[in-house]
Length: 402
Picture: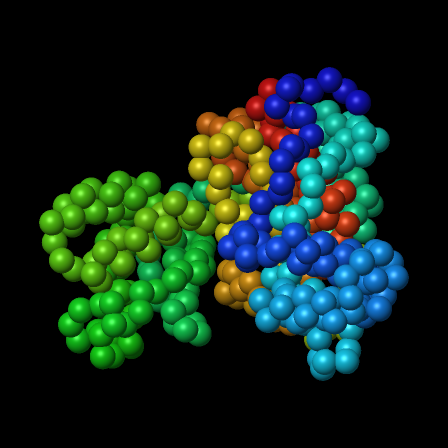
C-alpha cells in the first residue's frame, strides 16, 4: 500500500449512524445485545427469518428456551425485531439493523482493498473523473453494491421562491428555488400547533402559510451567504422578542442556508446492475434508477442524508437503512428514512472532509464538499464495508488537497 498521511489510518472506534439508535442501545442488557447481534448476523448470512431453535444451535446460548423467547419478545416490543406471528422466525427491523451497526467492534478493511483504493486515486488531481470512476469500481466490486462518489460546491445565485409543504405529523418540506431554476428540498421538523401563539395555534394551514411568508421575507432576493448573515443578525435582535413563528422561520432559514443546493463538479456511479438485482421485485425500481441518472439531485440527496460533522476534520461513516419505498421518495422529497418492519436498502456513506475547498483541476472553483457511499441490500457486510468507505473518503480528500 502506498504511503499516506497519518490521518489516513483505517477507522478506529465505533461507526456512527444516520439515525442514532443509542437511546435504544442503552436500554439493552448484555444478553439482549448478544441476541440482537446473533439475529442480525444470521439474517445477513441467510436472508431468512431466524428461529429461536436455530439461535441456540448456531450460537450455543445456555439460557432456557423460555428465557430466549422472552428476550426475543422484549426486543420485538422495542421495535428492533419483527415477526408476522408468534410462532414465526424473527427478522431485524431497520431500527434493529442500525442498532446492530453501533454494536459492531472497531475493525479495519483488508489491506489489499485499501491498496486498490490508493492506486485508483493516485492521479485524482490531474483527472478527477477518471480516478473517481476507478475508485467507485473498486468499492462496487468489493461490496457487491452500487457505489457513488461526488465532489461539488454550493450553488450561487439569489433565492427566487420558498415554499413550505406539509408531510405527516410534524414533518414538512421546504422547497427552495434559486435563480436559473435550481431547486433544493429540505426536510424539517415543525413545532406542534399548541406551541405557537395566535391564530396559527388553531389553524395548521394558517401556521404553514405564516411560516412560508416569514421565510420569503427573510430569504427571497438574497444569496445563501447573504441570507445566512441576515438571519444570524435577525436572530440576535429576536432574543428580546416573544414571537415563536419568527423563531421557527429563523431556525428553518438558517438550516436552508447552511445546506443549500449543490453543483456536482464530478460525480461517478458504479454497480447499477447490482442494485437492480436487489430491487428486481420492486415496482419502485424505475424511480430509484431515475434518481441515479440525475447527478445534481443525487448529490443533494447524499448531502442531506449524511449529517455534517461540525469542526471534526476526520471522516466519519454514517449508516442508515431505508425502505425501498422511502428510497424512491428521495427523488421527490429529499429524505424519507423508513422504519417499517422489513429491512430495505442500506446506505453506508461518508462525507469527504474538504477543509477550505479542494482546488480541483479543470475548474476555477474547488470542491467544498463531497461524499462516498454504498447503496445496496440491508444484508451488506457492514463490518467490512464501513472502514473501507471511511478510508476511501479520507483518501479522496487527502489526494485532492495535497
